[in-house]
Image 1 (cartoon, rainbow, N blue to C red):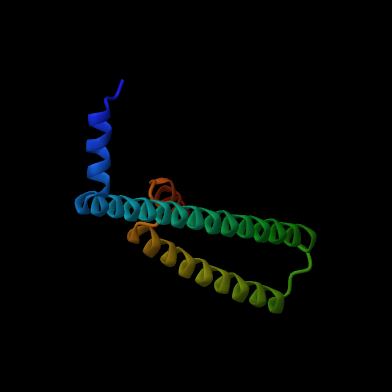
Image 2: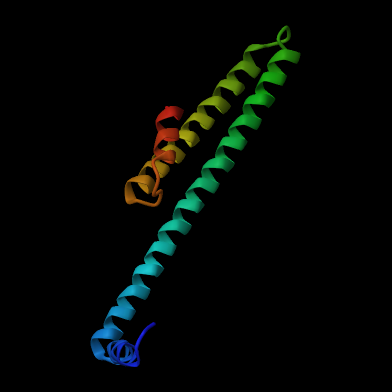
Length: 120
């Protein structure tokens, strides 16, 4: 059992200026940990959304290619190539943004970094 003297000493430490500084530093540390965790969740959510969009676009492209395989003309091929190039550029820009975020430490685990290597 904790003695009264121990409780009094703990209360004196908590209410002392040093105790208040330690408490404030602890709260700041907890706030920083929470912000880091929230940032990592946000990056994972954006990553999952980008993967879902890419999978949908790939499925749509496969469906269009299967139904119109015999009726491809040069204009539609050029338009598809331009769209593919635009998609590749947008994806590269997104990957560069994720690389910056991961380098900045938003993703605490190595899972996003592994996915980023796999996407290239």
